[in-house]
Image (cartoon, one colour):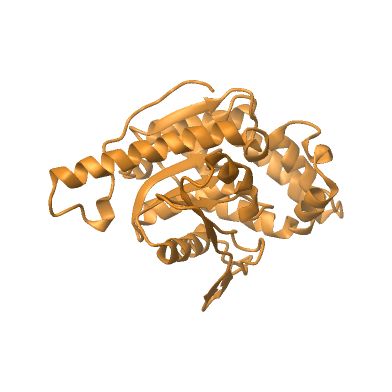
Amino acid sequence: MIDDIQGRIDYAECGAGPTIVLVPGSCSTGNAWRPVIVAWSGQFRCVTTSLLGYGGTVERRTEHDPSIHREAEVVETVIRRAGGPVHLVGHSFGGLVGLAVALRGRVPLASLAIAEAPAVELLKERGEHLHYGAFRRMSDAYFAAFQGGNAEAIAAMIDFYGGAGTFASWPPRVRAYAVETTLVNILDWASAYGFPLSAAALATIDIPALVLWGGASHPAMQRLNALLAECMGMAAAATIEQAAHFMLATHAGQMAHLIAGHVRDAEASFGRRQQESPAGPTPERQHGRRHRLFGGV
């Protein structure tokens, strides 16, 4: 735990090797990364946290200030505690926060990996109105149902991400936590819709990057993450063909394999860069040559 002046922040670490900071999504805590961490068998130093309002991390956003920059501040604090440069990995809303951290450029990153980030404003910016509308219809109906007294309104959002029946298939304690944190998740959506993203901004991310999505995910999510990879220029992209949004639980081994390969490539590139430049790169440009990878797993 980090005792930050603005409120406590979840912090835990295990393993040894290159440092990977793992950021979970909504309705979740750092424990969500446990299956991936287990698959790595201690070959990386894994640092986990929870986003605002989840686990032990104290909420610092409000209805009037739901800025994603408040989330980025938390992850930046975690990275400073871990010691950089780090490989930043985020799933779902955690991936969107990872993008915000990379764009802010206030902490040294060795690489970035995101899985199914809901970067919804990029869809609007790129004229993808059909897919943007799918997100908007889902979230508007979800918010209206919750305001109308449906305590389990969040189930519609979960099923949009994972497919019909996903929420009902979860263990009771997991469903209960999602219901308990509904108001936090609504703030998460305010953060996402209030985070303008453009192809031009994404093109400035000049560290090795990897974008993952599931081949069984909602078409709007698949298109969105394909756009993210395209807009980041040389970003690698990979589809886990049989996975949907909640791949941390269902396809942890495949995620672990892809992220490990990405981290090793970034480490090797960084090492070559240091050899080519005896003085070493500046903290803002601690990265190596990027590559492109397409295909399924």
